[in-house]
Image (tube, rainbow, N blue to C red):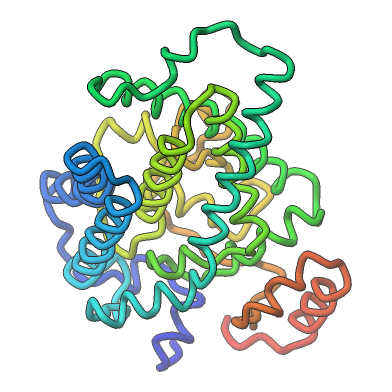
Length: 332
């Protein structure tokens, strides 16, 4: 086994690198899972309902998410040797996410604006606008707005994500390799993605909201909830959510999505399990026991933003692939 933790973790196996020999009780795992997925979104929603300031509430929800994820990864790590203090965790997250928040906002706005105008142009629905608009005095109105927008956007994102895996080494897949290059899960590593892919992912959530007729404040709230929720997918912690795994995508299911066999990985939904179940792509037969990463890039993958961005072009992608194939294997 290699002595360098960062080197060996590129080829980790969960049974070799888990932090303890005795697994926590299922009750403890479910408590962790509920806290992982719902503490940040709950903080955001409560702050928004109390203050009616969506941007300030989003900042608060994000801060709670940072603290929650950092503590979970420190105390209940799925892989050993990755624990960080809260300050290190935040710095690492910011370094890997970089322009993500800007791209998320831009994608949401673009999708919402374009599909909102298309909806009006073609009069897609005659539903009264008040049904899908937030009534400040109506908790039910807020819930309906977010629920319908999330379902519509997630359906679009499911097919966008699935297409990246389904048609060979297209531009969509070359972008997606940036995210699939992560060698193991931490919430900070999970933020690694090609900038254009981040834009396009949230573009489709914005499009779903625009199609429904959602106002931009609620669309921004939807994007915040999606971001807070999806940050839990890549946590370095062992969790469980019980039967809720049949409602939304969990960390364990997403580990299988990051299996090296990217063509057969399944679990293309980013929020709701329903799409994978409906279209036959759900796959989580047992606790993850494979290898993550990219089989075509076993040795190295660029860490700098410029080189990652260039991989959307065929020539830089093929050059990196050829370089990896000519390097000698380091591990058996």
